[in-house]
Length: 186
Image 1 (cartoon, rainbow, N blue to C red):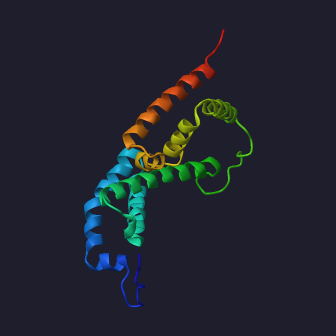
Image 2: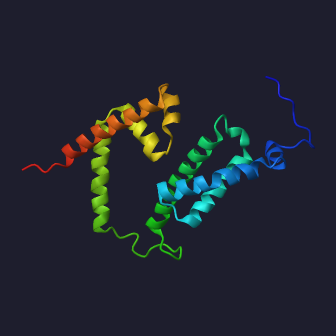
Image 3: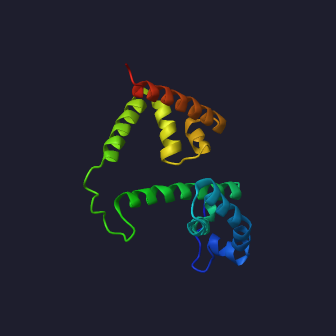
C-alpha cells in the first residue's frame, strides 16, 4: 500500500473534522450519554464525569482514525475504560494519602484490616491457582485490565457471547473453590 506523504500545508484529519463542524456535532450528540454512563454505571461524581468525557473526546480528536466502525460504541467503551481507570487511580491515591496530599502518618503500621486483606489475598491466590489458565486469563483481562468481551473474543478467536459464558463458568468455579477453601471445618 502506497501512502502519499502529507505536505507541510495539508491539514491533519483532526483539523478536517474540526473545520467541518463534525467534532462539535459529535460532542453535542454523545456527551450527555457518556456523562450518564460514567455517573450511573460507575458512580463517578458529576464534576469528575465531565472531566472524563472531555478526556475521551480529546483522545478521539487526537486520533479520529482509531474509530474503525461504530463511533458511539467506541466512545462508550472509552468512557467505561476511563471510569475504571478513575477508580483504580483514586483507590491507589487514597490508600496512601490523606486529603491534603501528604503521606499518612500511620501508613507504615499494619492494622487488623491489613492482616484480613493479606488473608484474603492468600485465599484468592490459592483460588486462582486452582482455576485453569484460560479462566485466569479471561478473568484477569476482563476484570483487572478492563478489556471488553469483544477484544478478548478477538484474541481467543471466539464470540463475545462465548466470552461472557466463559466468564460466568469461571466465576462459578472460582466461587466454589473459594467456598471450599474458606469453609470452617469442625
